[in-house]
Image 1 (cartoon, rainbow, N blue to C red):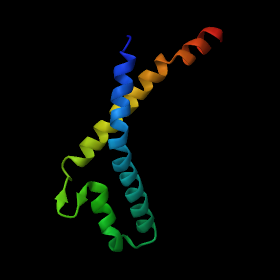
Image 2: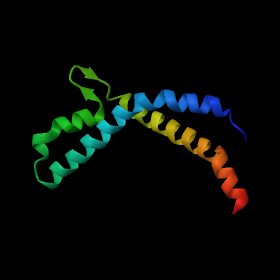
Image 3: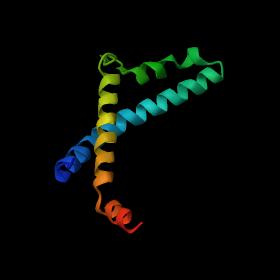
Length: 97
């Protein structure tokens, strides 16, 4: 099945800037909280878990933050994989090998 390469690239390129910060925040806060748990200091770093779940002070996105994070990442994975499979370099290597 052939996908419109220009539309896929546009979707991917548009979504990346919006997904980088939430994914980095999720990755960083989750890792740091696990290190705090390993060091028996979890109670001192519960605020990291709040950020990890999407609670940003007065703004509480706990219900939608994980869903948006997951949908955005899934979209990036799917569009990136499709673009990779349709790339001219990949097709050229496949026919030469």
